[in-house]
Length: 78
Image (cartoon, rainbow, N blue to C red; front, top):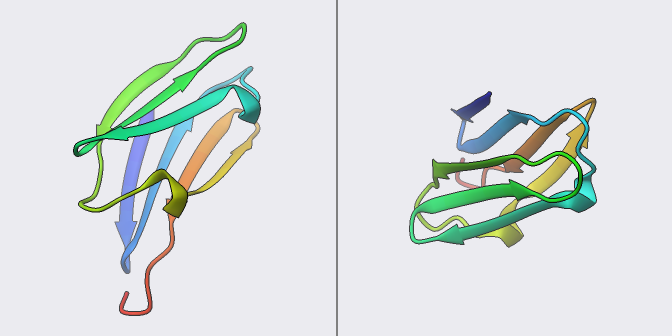
């Protein structure tokens, strides 16, 4: 399950990925699509629409208790 939120200029994606280590998560952006894939013993893959101008370098990435969280903090204007 994947959820996407945008609150006060901050963009966030959460995805259930039980049994996955953060080192096994791969992110890439092609055009306006964010691709999230995993390697290792548990395989997951999803594609979501990315906000205009999003780059992987802008994302704060965490994986806790099987929940992957990608967060792009709001800029000074947000």
